[in-house]
Image 1 (tube, one colour):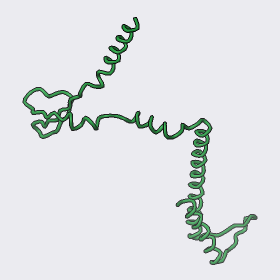
Image 2 (image 1 turned 120 degrees about the vertical axis):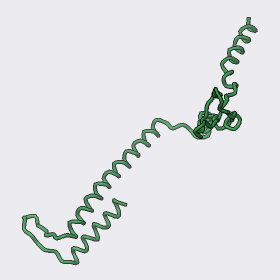
Image 3 (image 1 turned 180 degrees about the vertical axis):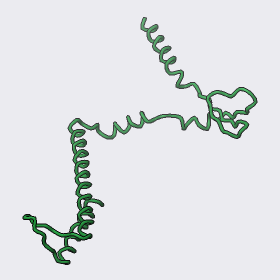
Image 4 (image 1 turned 180 degrees about the horizontal axis):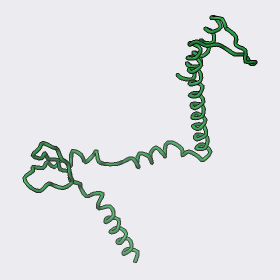
Amino acid sequence: MAYHSLKTRLGLLVLVALPLWAPAEVYRWVDENGKVHFSDRKPQGKAAAEDISEAVSKTNIDDSTQQNQKLGDVFPKETAAEKALRQRQTQERQTRRQQHDKDCKRARKLLDVLRGRVYFVDENGQPYNISERERKEREAKLQAEINQYCG
């Protein structure tokens, strides 16, 4: 009985694996208009088709699963805590980037205003003037913010 079961299993294994061993054929031909075609079936009619199966057999093998398994053996799997930490760090980077974008826009707008005709108003609503030196200092400070947040 055990012999029959082993024979059945072996037969089933061969049937399942047979498509993996079957050679795939690839044909290349050029039609009357000079257009190049590729197919797994030889074309009917007068077109002369070249069998290029050997040339492409190595390029059509997908070993990504095997390579991923090998990498998984070398590098430990990411734990749930590590994944959560990585996601939190990514979110924090995105939040910082959004804040930098806002700060960048604000600094550029203020610099444009400062470079134009402008007057300043104190907290009581009274206008006041600043010296050219103070305006240049404010301009330099805004330019430093632009370099920090926009770069």
